[in-house]
Length: 115
Length: 114
Image 1 (cartoon, rainbow over the protein chains, first blue to last red):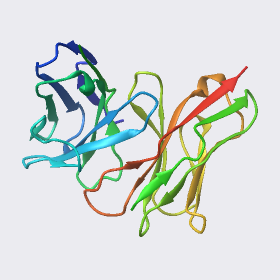
Image 2: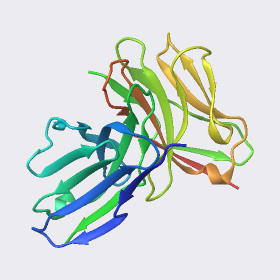
Image 3: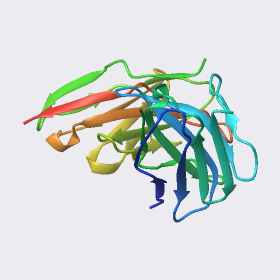
Image 4: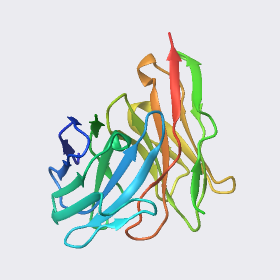
C-alpha cells in the first residue's frame, strides 16, 4: 500500500525558533498534499492544501507567513513553522493523494512542543 | 456549510459485543465517505470508504459501514468488538469535487472492555 512518512516524529524547540517538518510519499507521486493540525482529543483541522509546483492554498485563519508550505517535488512537501510560540504546540499530520485518486494516505504525524 | 457530525464523544462496549460508531454528514452532491482509526500519537489509518455501488462497505479488521443516502449517514459497525479495537475513530467526507480535502468529524473514542 501507499506509504507516507513524516520527519521528525517529534521535536522540541525554544520559542522564537523555526521548525521544518517533512512529508514524503514513498511509493507514489503525490500531486496534492494536505497539512492538518490536531489538538489533544480533537479532530484534524485542515491548514492548507498544496499542489506540486504551485503555491499552497491556506484555510481561513491560518497565517501563510507563519506556516510556510513548500511542495517542490511529487514526493516531498515541507511545513515550516516560523518563529514558533507555545501556542503552536500541536500534532501536525500530512496526507498525500495521487493525481485522480480518491484516497488520501496519512503520515504518522509530528508532535511539536514549543517551550 | 459542509460538515460531518459524530454525535458521540465516546462509545463503550464489552468485548464480543457488536459496536456502532455513528456518523452523519451535510455535503452537497454525492460525496465520498471514509472511516479512519487513530491510535495514540499515531497518524490515521484507513479503514474503509464508500464511493459508489453497494451501500454496505467492508473494510479492514472486520469493520463495515453502511451508507444511507436518505438519512445522510455512514455508520461504522463491527459484529464482535475486540479490546484492540479501542482507539479514536474519525468519519470523513470528501465533497465530490476535484482537489478538495477531507472534512473530518470530531472523532469518537471507542473503548472495548474485556
